[in-house]
Length: 79
Length: 253
Image (tube, rainbow over all chains, first blue to last red; front, side, top):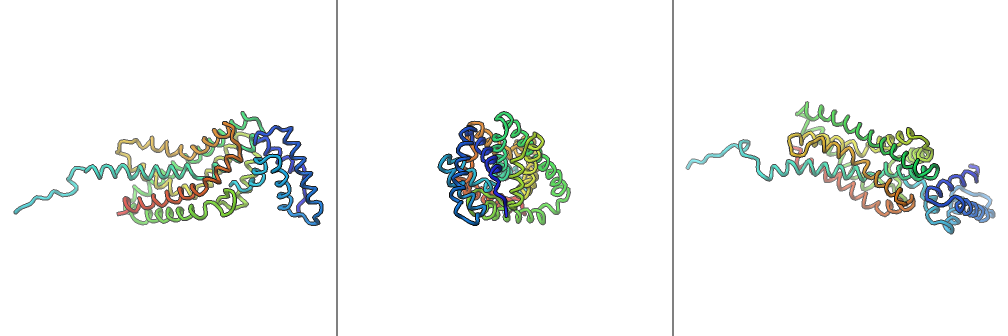
């Protein structure tokens, strides 16, 4: 079982956002919104897998920034 | 009626022979350079590294660190190529009895295997551009690319990825070394060819660096890599195949 570490996800997404040239202020806002919305969608589930969490975050991120969502989705598929 | 036939070795070289003696090594070298420039592991690690470096440092620092990554790749490629060049000179030219038989056939076999591997195994099945390296190893490389802080880290990461591609580059190093040595008495100086060949693996890295500096990001570059995945696969596979055929036709008696 893996602990859900919100801070590390926020930190990684911030680095990705800066790498994509998104201003840090707006990146912080939509990363936090995406995570809180993802938590809301997963609230009803009793067992949450890592993939469920990734899918929920990805779905929310796509609403705000397509490139950031793309990088988040493909981060382990580049090499 | 008496006819006089001159022995073949006393005939002046025909135009056809002269052209083939230059064109075959040049063709093999150009195809080898093409393969070196289109291999995807080093550019893949490089774009990840550049993306995370921009995310953690200023653009100026990222640019400086990326130069050290490229330098690492270049130096390791040059060292490996020159070592192979030296070893090939011993193996192929000090033992002429081996020249046309066992070693050449082994290399041809390896080239056919690499051609097959490029078509079917170089990119893994599924979305993205996941490559042939084991997944645990790929994850370690991704983690390392994320955590590079100093120029020495960047240099080592570049050198490491250069070594990891050895499976696909070593047979090419052997072939090109032999071809460059063969071109000793030809118009193109072999030092110039050696330098061009050594620089070929970093061409794609400089292009990726320029793309980042001109405002492209990881998502855009990765989308174009995915779009070109099948093209790269076919180019690599057919280049290895053509090199193997050229060696069978022109180098094996």
